[in-house]
Picture 1: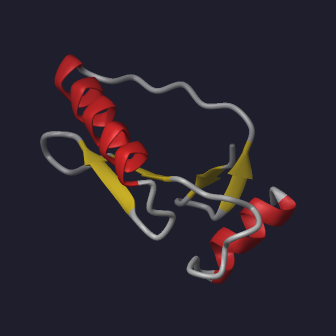
Picture 2: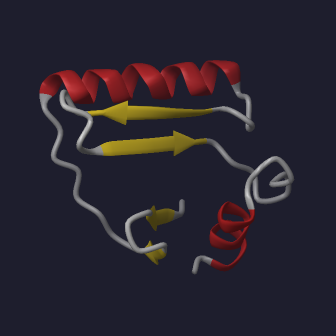
Length: 80
């Protein structure tokens, strides 16, 4: 697992997600789709009602990162 704070481009170790029920359902459903498709090039975005907050989720294999951008490769390989 890797977590990137996109606001300041830094890796973080621990987060707390505060989700409304509908947001949790959307995240649950979207993760199910990612797992079912098992496509490492795909990602999902979960937004709140007014698009102020966003969660981006993707599946990765540290041995198959060629389709990711350089920042993503670095956070996966170095956790920084």
